[in-house]
Figure 1: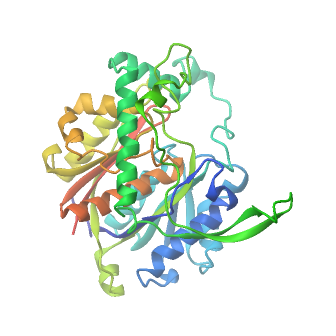
Figure 2: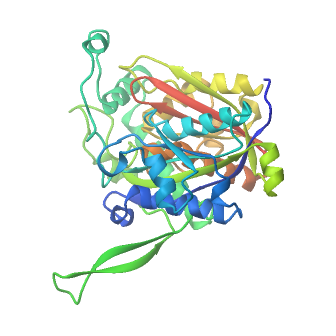
Length: 395
């Protein structure tokens, strides 16, 4: 592909992920994001005035996540007013799309230093609270359902049993717990300082206590027996439960993307580069099965194949989504070998919608470096029938 420059990943970071109504529920999303982006530029010695644009993913853009939260993150961070910001909604793929936007702007020579990323405070701005109406021109063509129903449809069509989904989900928790224990996420996490309420002397009065939050808190200690006891979440005789679905969480993530010239000018040491992206549109009713097609397009743009990918991140929106992906790509053995979602994912760590694309990018880059490997890919299914994927190369 003809490009003026590489789109260099200088660094990729995230907040620790907070469980529903957990530690991060006591901070606003713009304030959380401000700490993440400040941590990102501070550890790379970048003057915020050098950042030209902040591309920020967010799905539920109401209440404190409205008013173009991307611009407000830069302002809340205390940056110069010259730093622009915008907010992107490609549903679950929002901050993978901001990666795409940042890379495309740099490849074309329009911008030289961009931060892509996103946020979702699902405790404070509940999923679905921004729902609106849909045109009859759409609903006459398609039977539009919630994503959980699509996850059930995928399980049925691809013959994915409840037991297989629960087994996959348990493994996600085990992998995430092992990754935390071994410190695999430490390089990508920006610790967050915030005030949380605590009882004062055992009474009803609450006092605010300054807290440093640095470790993901949604991972569960569970068993197959406990998971099997959970009731179906969406239909009475279904196979999709809260245990084999992604967790509702709070979090933010960010990627610093630079042109070669800007990286050299500022003395930056890039960790990786984006090689290509792919998007796919699929049936809005089935909705969640486009990952293989998006990956094939991204791999084609990068001039690579599955065998080149040392690590593969597939967002765990539901266990059925990843199992369908593994069937369609024949990558089951790669999963068993630990090359697909080696450190858990949305089921164990959580899926903070607008932040997840940047989060799995940060995790992918760190894991490739840990393995001393070269190429990796990250993919995400998207509500209403899309998918997006991006390929990275370690430098």
